[in-house]
Length: 382
Image 1: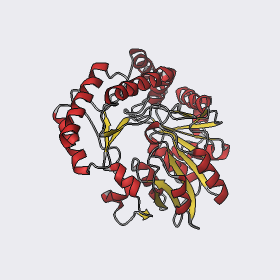
Image 2 (image 1 turned 120 degrees about the horizontal axis):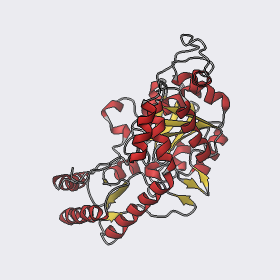
Image 3 (image 1 turned 90 degrees about the vertical axis):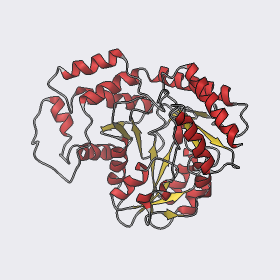
Image 4 (image 1 turned 30 degrees about the horizontal axis):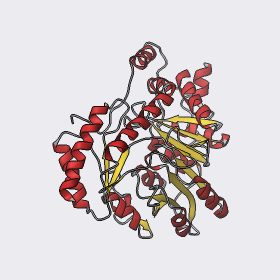
């Protein structure tokens, strides 16, 4: 695509820092891991951070250390990336889909309340597109019913609710650093929790179930017994290379988020007078947005076929775009596995969404070109 949907933003100093790590003998479980984890304890104010190989790995560890398994249910949105539900199924538990709020596109607290059964063990809330979910209401529901609350902050690094950082509301929260995210480590994730025992267990599980935190022993120069494993674990480690890149990216987080907010403002300015489009709000009272993507919706009068026609026209003009998100409960992998009440808001919304090119280094003229092509395509279906 001439204008891609997303593009990572890597600077020369970050490349040099990675090159320097490659000149050392420590490429895994080293000091850069600890430093990167420290970036997230400072960002969120949460006591413990555990770096992992992906956001999906982080979600899986969250489900596992909370003891959720066969016969248990976890309430999740369907309007999100499939990893949210997959992580629940990895432990033979059941994802129960609840509908979203039409405005925020996050889990509807009322729908969550209706979805609770005697088998419910947790609520997994996603901060969709970087807009923080209604965590106060969801936390109140979780406390009232004795449920764990997991925060999927993979799309919302740096977001806040009432001045409190996302990632600090749940029992466990997960961040992700895929190349289309606000910051990237190539692949990677971070789990934060106020619970020292949960953190210690996740550190063991990410490192093949080795007991005692092999990472801390390696950093301190103690060998321990590398071949002693306390339980079934996984290779969910994040390399020193990735952590070094993440440290550099985190140092620029404020400027990255500022630029992304500027890009969202440019789109808003260009598209404000297009009546067939529903635009995401630039500001939400009491909330600091973290712009992950810029997603517009066609008006409710439009069909999925018309939306796909618009996508096709954008692609013909070499403009990257996407249908964020295809509902999980309608995916082939979830035939026979989808549970929950009907999801009318999810299905209606998902049939009309268009994700536009959105990344740190997109040029203003590129935004203008995207909007010109989009307006012309929308006019043809109006």
